[in-house]
Image (cartoon, rainbow, N blue to C red; front, side):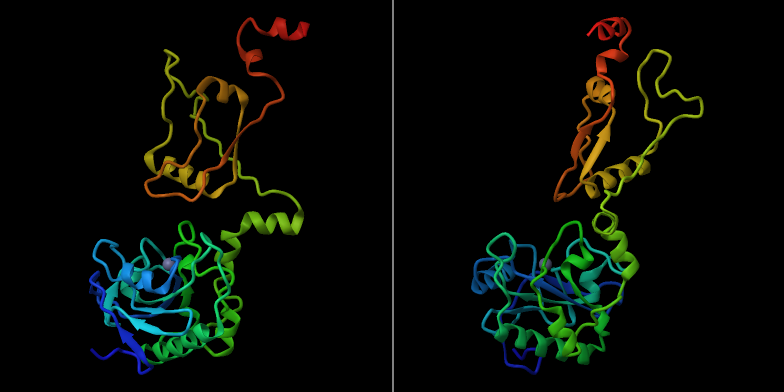
Length: 284
Ligand SMILES: [Zn+2]
């Protein structure tokens, strides 16, 4: 079968694809790395039914281009993701898997022959689908909590010079927001601290029997779990830690890359809050 690109490419059909949904046409070019030991293995995986994934193209380290899904179809490469109001990134994009073993392995640089092929294929796709250069994105751009490919070694500047990607000031506000903790540390030397507090109107959070009650709804609790997934550490009073021993982990569905470190913070020991213990503390 003929490939969609006019560049020399092999056709290796995948099985996981379907028509694009909602009348969407490709307006994003999404870059990935394979994260697998070899390009051959990655092709085998992306074309197998059991993988539940696929991609339009793969570019090997030698610059060989393999097409696996027709550009008009919806390949399964982005997963749960989001960009500029769009949540069905698979329906809105064409995906290129640039073979590289990735961060889980030794993450080598992307070789020149490979990047020449990526550059040529990208320019060809952008021209044929009228995709704007600033819509050439990394998988990590559209799924920042889950993905880090193609990673910091991917030569965006080289692609930008060739007219594939605009490098500067795009989505600056979103980037600042996403990296707020890091930027605060670099600019001021201080950590970014977020205070979360809640109380009832009468200042009590337990029933008359002493049994504690939720005072927030499911949306607020989901938000708290999302905060836990984004922050490095959670500080609680040691009294709370001693009484409840809360896990303080992110328990939203899905795989979260990390959990915050739990930190007890108080100037006094937990037992001094218990009736009758105050005297003993004074004596020590
Ligand atoms: Zn990816």
